[in-house]
Length: 277
Image (cartoon, rainbow, N blue to C red; front, side, top):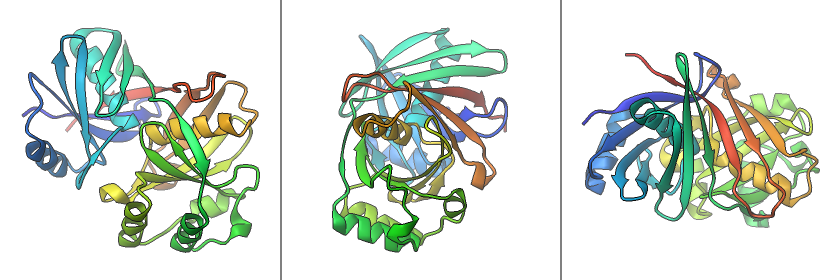
């Protein structure tokens, strides 16, 4: 089965988060998709099959299926644009219907997704305490302007805002402990962030639930973060830019447009590049 390898949210022709993309006549059996994702070894692989009104899509990490993956959706949008021409492609996920668009631009593809609806809630004390312990942090390290919360845009993500960029750069944790915490609280990832300004954020994204220590670019988490910032009345001015992966040496750039309506879809966009063997 042909697996395309595409880095989403790249910095031009460098960086970005690699994703596998499989476009088939019909989706393979679940066990086969899980096996392929493990063999590919990227944080996620997207599987897509054409339907009467768009594309049926499922996402697999090396160790589990996930309900939504932003960077793999961007990679899929790039692949569909390369195979079918520029356009907007309707996608049916396990729990939502969204769209992705792709437009070729020389050696790269400009792509954007419309996230599932967003929601957020304050992190319960047990979750916050466990997360601080996981990362060796205390409450004084947090940015009080962005309280800890569980944010959702197709999947649940714990949001922890840090007061200093240095604390973000120093992030570390034990993978198995992170996996246990995410399983206990039904989280897909944890978003650690530092607000450089009201519209520019640096983020890191542990993905222990999928067996991945850290993702260099996470569109789903960016959508969830943007929805949460809207919920708390953050002065985002209608959009934010996210720099991710720089502490991993895989610089990635994400842009999120934030409409005013509470809970409405977030548009997350960026560049995708084909990875050559």
